[in-house]
Length: 349
Image (tube, rainbow, N blue to C red; front, side):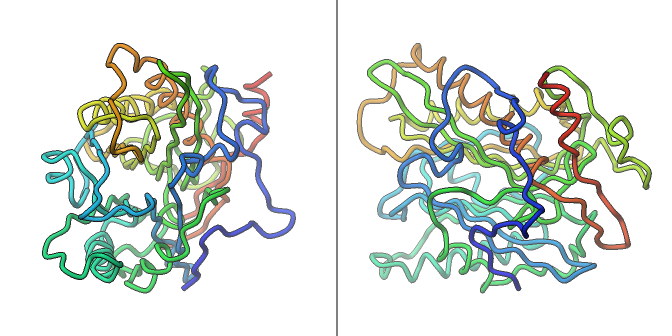
């Protein structure tokens, strides 16, 4: 086990994010960390589970402060393609509230992770009398690079991610739930970004976190990039028509559940900008929540800037997930290359 709440890459291996390469998506400014943790009261934790060469997996926790069955926050969910195991979705959709952190992991580990999340929640202060709660756990299939049948994510990994969740910069790429994921033909993983759009009555912050594992052909600023076109496609081809993506959106804008479902819908739409195929075997989901359960919701007619900010932030988060990842050799000797930065520098010129 490697409990890595926000691990730093080894010296000499740091990789640049999209903005570092001059790729600026959309007009709205980012928050100070360009991460989901720019939304006040939102923390992120990772536990990475590696046993090379066969296991490359983990768990990622998105933790809204003080969320509980007694203090749920408004939330919405949207399914772009439902080939997935998003635990807790029916109650979230029915009631429009989120009452636990959102955890992301590997497909066959999702059920253990949900059980561990329930145990962790029942031990939280104020939950001594709780008799029912709705854990929310999303997943992507990391079986291309990891022995998924081993179900390597256990309760101690979940608790480490939750207990060590923090604000500030968020580790990206091959960490936590993104350790073994692949997207658009390249090694991918966790990515994040934020925006600070102006809404009627003042500004707000919206942040996204993606677990990128979906198929299609990468597009950056209108330019198509494949492993072969950037000179890293010499090995066995990576399936381009399968895979999934989990997206978590947080905002401090006062939105109700219906409006948050509209926000979640835009988050899934944004994957098309990056070249997503939305194939039969893809589980494409977004969960959106607000950290402001009180206050009058923003008028629907004023949501345009927020919708645009979500589209831009998801696109950038996917690019960050690719740029932060590193070439990985995993289960069965399969190797998935990282996306080199030079083609993106050329695309930004």
